[in-house]
Image (cartoon, rainbow, N blue to C red; front, side):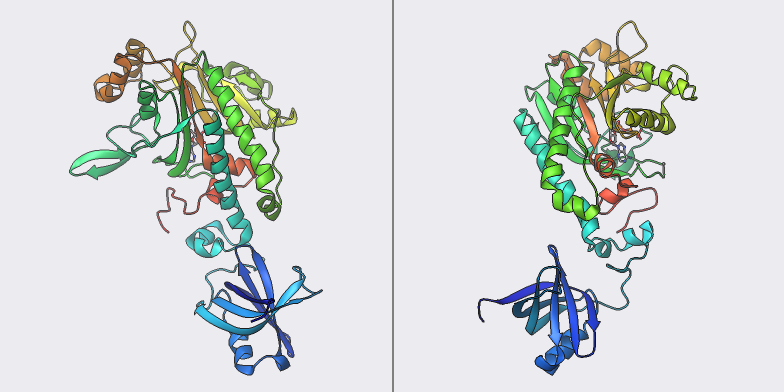
Length: 423
Ligand code: ATP
């Protein structure tokens, strides 16, 4: 071996035979390199061995590096030996470099192959960076990371979207959100906590923004004076993530042909009532107390985008629309709640929580639920609970909106939905 001898491991992306010369394109996570085989200069067994490989086989190639004006890298490898680690069967279930539009279902059925495309992998590299940036921001702001159970006896908001399972002969559920546990922790002195973990929803909605398992980023903080403290915290975290990704994710963003816009903070706040007014002026009449709905959210997104805002808050939803743990805005039909919308879609909701025991129990009953079945939670409010508030953000919804991807499934390695439980 001399200085310019290298060994490259990877997948055979393509083979081109041009008579007197052949090329094998080898791919690894960093990109591709050209293996050049001038027929006359390469031992016949090596030549035929390398050029007869099937696409996507995994090999190790050793050879000399030569400068080349013909390749993107400015170099090529003239092979001296190779080892076949794993031949790829023929035909491939889908191509890696072919420029044909493959349906989402085919891609997801063959996700291992789909993920060999660098631009598909780039989304997951960005997702990983996003979670690092998120942890950085939480650490800077004094939050501790916690892990709450995903096997639970009862859900946060009733049964409609709970997955039921058999827990040694008694019913149990997969957690929809860490809501109740996060709040219980506020009574302990762990007064700023966050969790990044799976949330399960038995969603019957077959949409591009709903899946049955997603990664939820939840935070809860004590000693707040109003929900504004929570909103300010979310803004700081989101700003840190967007700014960080714009810088650290340059390579991946270039692969995707995307740019990240980093809006200034604070983001504008619209109250729910203001939204009704905006929608009415745009021809959509909703009644006080109605859900804004997907269409309403989208329309508000269009109006805000015209004004130059990608991210904005919708606050003070009607109390009747919100779960029991949200604090009512006394003397009004509204609540201390908010959603953060990103380009016309909700990516987060949160608010100030009801920390007063009696009122909390009243609210549980008012929502038609049995306070007795929530004592494991309400007990934590009986012996001293600070004022607090928090949020939940769907990591994948956030990422697909940031990258303008068409479907939340693009940001999930192996999505689970109404129809999909495999692979
Ligand atoms: P939507 O009304 O859009 O279905 P939601 O009101 O049920 O959402 P929350 O319970 O407030 O959502 O959950 C907080 C966040 O978790 C949402 O803003 C979203 O980012 C994410 N999320 C909720 N449900 C799903 C889902 N089925 N798939 C992907 N992400 C979700």
